[in-house]
View (cartoon, rainbow, N blue to C red):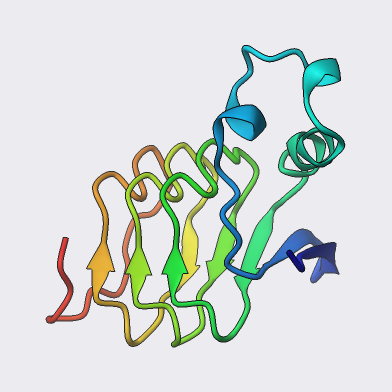
Length: 129
């Protein structure tokens, strides 16, 4: 897994490499943080900082629930290699109002952007939803 976070244009930015971020240990608040693995603890703390996600070139799929509940994400930049955004991928990203869409996007899964602040977006005619 190669992801990094740094300040870009005044926003804490995650450079996302396509890794599967969602799993029960990482996402469940039912597990006290001291019982989670070191990676899970670091992930849980850092995800609250993310304000922008830049998906790295070569990533083709944003997996299910990857950024679910990342309440501070405002902007997402998708390279043209992204063809699928799976269900709930950005759900409950309540500040998300700016997405640079992939021109090759073919599929957006169920509730992928539920409870976001998006007001408009590019929807290709060939897109499956």
